[in-house]
Image (cartoon, rainbow, N blue to C red):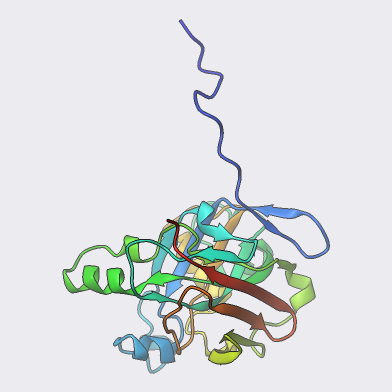
Length: 241
């Protein structure tokens, strides 16, 4: 009888994100936060909270780890005629969370660093699923749906709140907001995620997008920035034949 100590198919490569200064960050899991800027919540037809006391619960969804794109080339996905950009701060966890619910005061100690990324969305597929009351995973979790720039260590970035997240498409500004406009900040989100999942080193958290989401077409070029400290440049390539 054959043993069970070998792979029966070739092992897929570990998704990895480059780190400023050298090295790579192996990705375990990608968490995403929905409706985390009030202006975006409103543009999507949702009611934005009037205060922190009215926030309710954050909206979470996941993408596969191999959805990341680090070489700057995003292939336009199949099955959609309405691919949308959503620029986001990305949080990279460098330590495992302790068992149980994470204290927000301890959350920052888990953070390795930050990047900027795009939560690409097949908006037509998402909207059709929502209209039928069905899960909308196919609108969010697909190949090349999480392009990301290099990571920088948290100490290099400093305080997040006063920094500005932005996205230009073909040199025209599409999205822009200060991070102090997040409904749920990084410690809040890690605390809430820990109620539902075991957070581990290698996890990425896409923190949500401000208003201004819109369609992308093959040939478009995107530049996402967090001030002058983080950057992602990517191009939308034609669909695969």
